[in-house]
Image (cartoon, rainbow, N blue to C red; front, side, top):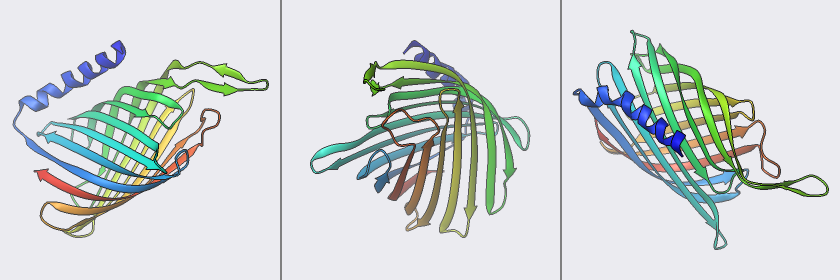
Length: 247
């Protein structure tokens, strides 16, 4: 807990120079319904919130996601995710970043998963219909693993913390077809000796009114070394209504 609080303090400190300057605030809130495969074969409902603040030199963003699902009266999904990232422009293409994320997923092999790190990013494409950025750097990952039973005869492994050096990499691609339709594809990799998580999310967003949009998304999440009795790959197919504000 002390490490996580220190991480939050670090990211907040990095964000202060940008928040103190005048800039542009914008964001979006979403309500979604989806179908899941993998560790949870169920439908769910979700809410999401993204807020960003941009100045000439800084960009700060936060993201919050909550998913909840039931099947035959029993809870089948309960996931919370939070991330905060601060980017500092270094030149026309290069930027530095610091990132903090924390996830709680009741129906997975871990009680919680946190990451703190930073690095450098490169704006590959910008200024046209297509945008694309790459980023990567070192960090530390903290996993709170659930108790598990393995072996013959069965042996119970108690819940425990795993702290490991890690490396984060991300690709963020977007394409604007016209004023009303946008495509996005984001890939994230979080490497550690214990396991590596790889995620890819594809979105198609269509503007309905000035502030409201409809969004279809397909997400794949893969763990290279899942805990016993857990699936390596999860998928989520969602339809969302998105409300944009600010900007």
